[in-house]
Amino acid sequence: MTDEQLQGFAAQALNMAKKDIERHRFHFLIATYHEADQEGLHRMTRIEKLIIEKLGEAWLNSGRTKDAGFELLRVAVDLMPPDAVIFVTSCNAFTPTAKFAALSREQQEELMNSGHDRHHEAVKEGLLVIQDGLLALAQTTERICVYQQAVENGAFSGSPQTKVFPQEGFSGRMKMFGKESR
Image (cartoon, helix red, strand yellow):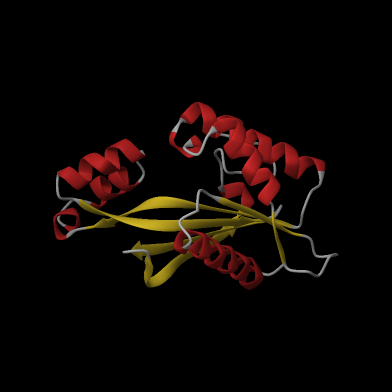
C-alpha cells in the first residue's frame, strides 16, 4: 500500500466522521481496509457500539477506559488482521504563538515533546493557542499516517496536516500492529 493510499483512507474516514458530527452523533470512528475485498473502507460500527456500550460515551477521556478500549481494538485486529486500520477521534491542536517563537530551540522542542497537561499550561502562558480538530490515524503493519484537520464552528478549517512515517516510529495506545509501548 502506498503512502498516498493510506492518506486517502485517512481523509475518507475523516469525512465519514464529519458526517456524524453534522448529525450530532460522533464519538469516534474505527474502520478497516482489506485489499482482497476491493470494497473500500469498512466501518466497524458494531465494534464502535460495543465499546460505547461497555465503556461509555466518554471512554476516550479516561486513561483506564482508553487502555481497555484500545486493547479490545488490538485484539480484533490480531484476530482478523486487515491491511489497514483507521481510527478517528476529536482532538485538541496546539499552534505556536509569537511568544513561543521567542523561546530557544531547546525550549520549543521540550515544550512540544511534553505531555497534554503541559500543552494546556502553555496555552494559559500564551505560548500556544488551542484549536479543536479531528485526528485520523491510518496504519498498516509498516506505515502510519497521522492526518489532522482543524475544525471551527463544526466546519473544516484550513488544510489538513499530514505526516506519514514507519510503524517503528510509533508507540502508545493507538498502535494496532506490533507491540504497544509507551
